[in-house]
Image (cartoon, rainbow, N blue to C red; front, side, top):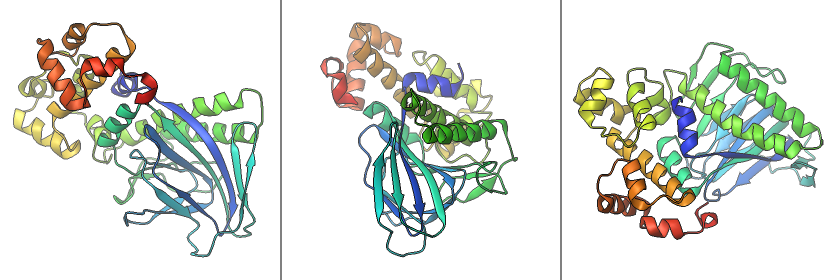
Length: 332
């Protein structure tokens, strides 16, 4: 399998589209820190929005076709940018989602809001290797005007992509399907919206990884053609004896060059990433299967069960036996 499919095999992601906002300016949306294992997202279907950050980072302008993901689940503040007090909002519960509306007469906003959900330890891993604010920009949104194809990370500027890439077209189509399903209170609509949400996460990450200017993290690493063999090898066979010289040979580069590229693009070493992959695989098998601890240790590349137990406890904060006994609900 490709690296992204393998990654989601290790950390399954579910989607949930919860709220549709239909506002006239002035308006605002305030969201606190997300629950464990949740990554909030917002899709600007029509209109514009301004993203403020409680930590005081750069203000970001969002427009139709933009998708905001917050892998770290950080608190955030979206508004129309006028600085005026928001109009009174009403909340209406539909068959498949909640509709937030207001009495504002200014510029209109149509926004879909949801969450990507996964086990909390998977979310922690993903947050480590993705920017804490990720903005994917699509330009060919037929329901709102846009003129250039851009995608970027908040605070890191925007950069150009060829207009109408295959992935961008698919992502735009998906957003329009989500909007149409949100408009239609039909049987099975909630299930459809959640399935579309899960696909949205995959397509958004695929689109980011396809540019040479992907943000620092696993997306930048995956988009680097010379380093892709190392990433694929570790995901294909995490239990193999992957030394830095061996990974470097796969990439046709020196050990020192491999180390430098991983640090620059990922922000961590290849050894760090390999350990993360191994521990995710081990945790999944301990929680979901009847494998012995020794079998799991061998699967993830440890010849000694004792060495595996030490590494697992250091990384996960509990022994394999404690992890196995833990009720799965408490881990999500």
